[in-house]
Amino acid sequence: MFLPKYPDNPTPPPAHSHAPTDPAPVPVRRSLPSVSIDQKTVAVVLVGGVVLTALLAAIAVTAVSVAIAAVVLRSLLRDHHRRR
Image (cartoon, rainbow, N blue to C red; front, side):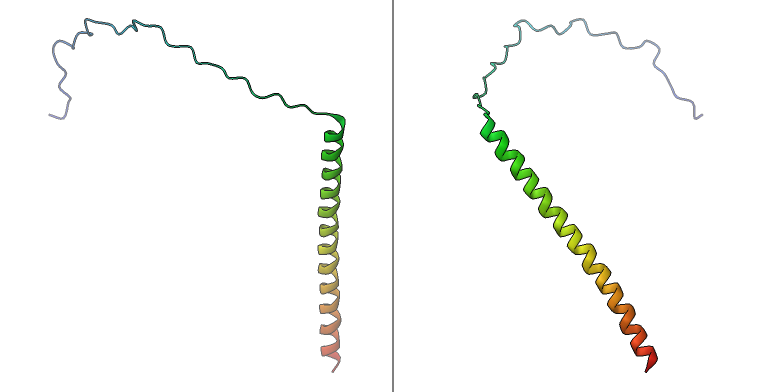
């Protein structure tokens, strides 16, 4: 009752095969403009990277010190309120 019904003869494969008649066009490769990198450019990039890294480190150290100061002040104020 619930068994699938299969056809007696399966459908035959198509008589024609698809084969391209014209070869695919070869894409044209465009050359990129040449970029000259000299020692001054490398030095500027390195100095910029060092400066940015130093700024990020300074911000991180400042954030940590502010957080520690906040915890210490909170502890001192809590102890001060308990003594009263």
